[in-house]
Length: 312
Ligand code: CP
Ligand code: NVA
Image (cartoon, rainbow, N blue to C red; front, side, top):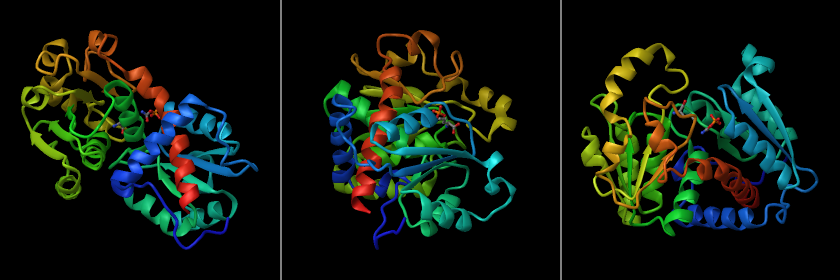
């Protein structure tokens, strides 16, 4: 497809301004209410969704979402494309960009996503990298809006691996939304300094804040939203035993939740490892909104694609 001069991407959570993040979430709520009423991909226009790592939710939500928008989804993976045999990202980008209207990519290095965005000529969406998971962040904030009615001013506590993609997205995407984000993580697993610094700049304009602590109770105290994620992200399997030993005190259990607000909700992007980062009775308990959260991947990503294509 021929690109216009300005092509919009979502590579990290601050690629959307505060007003734009709110606009995407508003649209997602409208799309959720009327799933088949929006047809921006009529034609059909096509979206390539490329996986270098495993996925259930992302794969199904993009595939179903593109179909509901009137478009056609091409699912690709490294193992069966020439990318897996060493074709450069810039070459893959130019080929995909000539045939599809957007590229969605789950991969390892953030720099590779940036390279894809430089050369594709169409919107590129980060469907999870080692550094950020901005699609999940949108689904999560949609879920919080549904359950709490607002985002700005809420206190969100992420407990666990503060250096992983989800933690970074909460820090940055929370600042964009004007939330008070607390990260409780062991020493050596705090969010990257550059992510916190970028988030603090954004937060200065939105009224949000970022706090990093190694005390899980301090992180969760009075929080409106408590979140965790796996302790062993994709690509970190060799460190599994060491990570499980390190993160034990950061498990989201009923005892830890005693310190949160009485009406706190619990999020987890899934897949969840019961008995490790989250207790079974918390995941399946009344505060958990994880199934709404999983469904909201569909609605949030539909709105995101419509937004990016309209602005590009
Ligand atoms: N939460 C999430 O991204 O799930 P998948 O890995 O199944 O896509
Ligand atoms: N942090 C996890 C998220 C999975 C959706 C990972 O990268 O494996």
